[in-house]
Figure 1 (cartoon, one colour):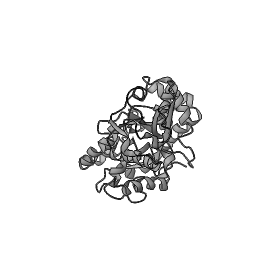
Figure 2 (cartoon, one colour; figure 1 turned 90 degrees about the vertical axis):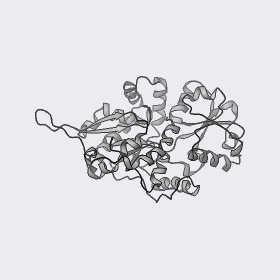
Figure 3 (cartoon, helix red, strand yellow; figure 1 turned 120 degrees about the vertical axis):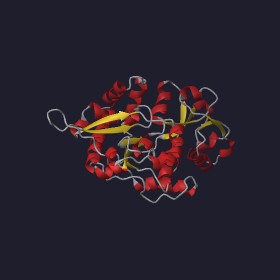
Figure 4 (cartoon, helix red, strand yellow; figure 1 turned 60 degrees about the vertical axis):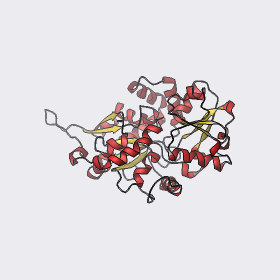
Length: 341
């Protein structure tokens, strides 16, 4: 669903550049304009994605296409991410909202000088990432990754998660052959010299199914509460939210309505995404949309809700394993206060 290497790697640059990213207050205020007749036009907002358009983002495109933003007096522009990532652009005031991930945000939330962004909603309620392999490799449990190749981004959090699930299952992490690789085509990679790949099931898992591959899938969230972190999430620029709380609430109301439409109408929602990004494989989009219909809210009390116990469990585990420099105080980095009822 995203190039994790690219996004996690950019955290280093985000932290270095954070002091340079603060802009004038004017960039954090809604851009209200007046037409020639003197009528107030809609408040303009920018939402920057984490990667290319996919079914994680469907609710945004539905809200745009169906006029849900307009109903709230808003006009939303959906942007592709810059090289530095969504976090940098949002933190610097170049966009009001963006898509990120709890693990990607961890170093920032542990920093003594974090860039000014806060998570305000979960787009998918549970972590649906994990390890996929061809069924004939026999890797039906984490321990069996030992003795096989794994496409790694060489990132500490990534490898620590792999080590945890393998060793908790009785396997030897050191026996995994780490192959530095940024896999952009999982189907091709699995049919070469790569035995296991970290994927997001709603996209690459569905893609392997659509293309007829028999696979085994190890879902991280099944191997510990601390691995059921939030991925992906919606972030907001802190200064913008402080100055415009009602606008943030209106934006979330529109986005919530978009995701609820996608839950009830996956076929129509898939077509809206395809209209916005016609380069996508229509069969994968439609099957992914059906699968995600049960995942956007899942067992939560409402769309977007973040359970603090789960949020804190992941960050606590990172600190215990020395994967972040400083302990992240409980409840840091997110809020549910802008979510509609």
